[in-house]
Image 1 (cartoon, rainbow, N blue to C red):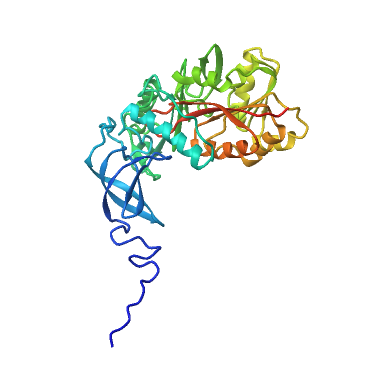
Image 2 (cartoon, rainbow, N blue to C red):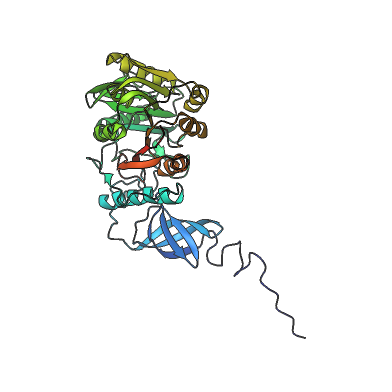
Length: 416
């Protein structure tokens, strides 16, 4: 008697779970890239599955290799460009694709700006459940190359490699020249490489931080006398001190419009500047408000913020060295309601306790400066659910040749 055919096992071809035949790890597919998603990856579809591939351009026809599968999503790497997008250009950097620093050099500059606009829009809708503005304009960088005033380099003493980490690994990509580094920063990399070849690097040094100011480049750990010395930068009439161990925005050509966008037309009696760093926004806030308090968890940065305020003679502003969420959670019940709060958190966004405390304080106006659209959208979801509404949104291309983008959102509420 003919055996009855069994239904396919769960996870077999045609079933659920395991990827279909031809889409296992290591399989190659031909795909057409539809658009760029948050994280900078290209979106494509094949055989009913979603394919995510890095270093793509919208409109590319590619051969890709599946590296791993998660449900119906395949994560792939580029093998060959079969038919290039009109937006695709030849990357000028010989390390592109191996070095983990840049992931948009394959796109012409207009396509980069358009992709970043769509990344913000996508995050607002999917993560924040917020309807984005009809038009999101990304202010272009005055310099598409040689703009980066800060760099972090890794050193591997076993092979003598000095540069950035390779994409997705902790292997060091040996980089002789970086096309996005400012000329003075590139000069320090060249000098470090000379010292490495001569075995003159500081003993035990495995990582170097360099930052440029108006008065040269600071380097830590120091290689030569004066490397550890603080640097200064003049921004919209305010003078800032900082060193290689403190965060300071990397694209100095966009600092003035970024600060102007962060403040908007805000003015009044009291303001809070959360995650204030060395005081980039604290000083101009103190020109507009009778009382300003900055909060910063990095002790060296907060010390510079206090010095920068003192240098400017702004005695009605102060800076607290504290974890922002913890400080707010402890102080919010006793703080008078501020007229304005500006927050500029790291890429991870604001901590939940920070958002809760802001909602407890109920300021009528907020300004959120963010370098990550996804965590920005997450926090905006909580703020808009509590009654805040987006007044304005502006974006700045602080990071050309990468998928990163700086966004400034002003929010208002009807709290009285």
